[in-house]
Length: 82
Image 1 (cartoon, rainbow, N blue to C red):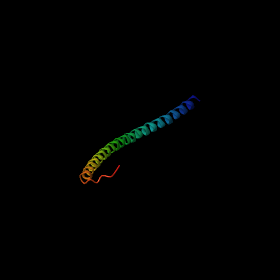
Image 2: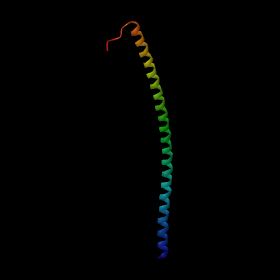
Image 3: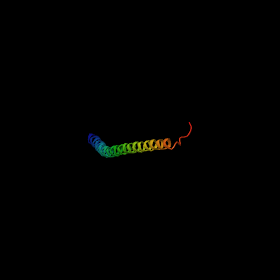
Image 4: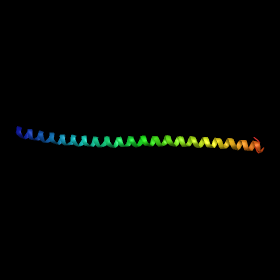
């Protein structure tokens, strides 16, 4: 009787060990995928920062064009009434 109980306990322990090993492997996979996502997010943040820089350059150019246009209108006396 005690031998059957011991065998049953060992069987359960083997099953538990197998599940724990599978969970450990799953956690390792999740860690790898999370690291990949973090790397991708960091890359996206860099791209967004680059877009902000491009946007700032575009605004700077538009401001210069607007300034030049205002100067041309003043020289030609083409300004519209307020």
